[in-house]
Image (tube, rainbow, N blue to C red):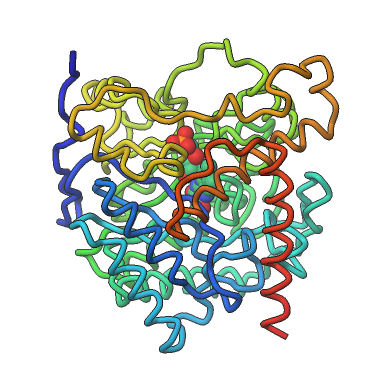
Length: 440
Ligand SMILES: Cc1cc2nc3c(=O)[nH]c(=O)nc-3n(C[C@H](O)[C@H](O)[C@H](O)COP(=O)(O)O)c2cc1C
């Protein structure tokens, strides 16, 4: 039995643009820029494959506004904005391939803040000097000066204008996951006592100003989206009640699509890790150890339902959707307008096409099999090293599938998590090293 076909319905956005259907490929960092942080041929191949896959909307991975503070090696950075002619030509090629199926392609604009590993930044920048203590991978950040905040607001705007000029059909400001804008929202990471910290109004000022400047830079007829945490899931962090208030402020900011996500590197709920542990590795392990635990398919849906009550703009929810029935039901219930998909599209770019055709078979889901020993070594999997391998190996596994799509190769589905872990370390460090050498 097939469920309804709301997935195939177009969606007209407040700015007047129309998404051809309700499936969006959510942002996934690609890590495939060249050593000068420019888009490459691999972006062209990757996004052509995803465009042909049928999603009405493709959102790029993090595109950085600050080349000094990357989210990971291989990010595209548009700094300065606009970039030189060669970098611009590469962006145009990327945009052309990524819109080749009549779909939208929106650039996700981002600053990593304190979540920038030591091998890609000399000095992370953050609201306050609160260090991310995770696997000894992150240096203590420096608190931003007010003039730097004001400069960054303009950078979001200039990168958005560059995206429009290059042929991207929209932009998404990244205000989630503990990166810079999201870190400003949280009292844990924002301990400022000036106009950018303290009350929620002050903590949200940077985000709201960045969105406002972005809208002003691209004009009224161009899609501007925002990815926002429903909550940080951290003690004393940005709460779901605060999220509701921020959404109300955003109602008058000209946001065309609000994507609901959640969590940070310390609480990676964005990936559905539901452990109570307060470190990412433990949280990841808690999730992969409890495969029998039934959780709601799309884990931010309940938050979206609450946000829906106060939001005036269309909503997208990303995280955990793995069945066509679950997607149709979410659309049917009216809690969401666009379904975001990430991991399933790493191993099969054509998933949206099949969903739109009514195929009810479950989506690719490797999350629970990507585990060291896969249960065989269960008694020993609480050892820190095992947890580390599982977390980075899982993430690396998806990175590697994306890179393979960019190389025009088939996914390596049989690759084990330990193999993926070793390759992950090799890829990240060698890419970082190439970048450093090129910039010297
Ligand atoms: C490999 C990978 C890279 C990701 N990179 C980004 C990113 O650059 N920006 C972002 O907002 N979210 C990023 N995410 C989070 C996804 O957009 C999405 O919120 C999350 O994977 C949950 O959706 P899913 O269950 O459909 O995978 C990434 C996720 C994965 C697996």
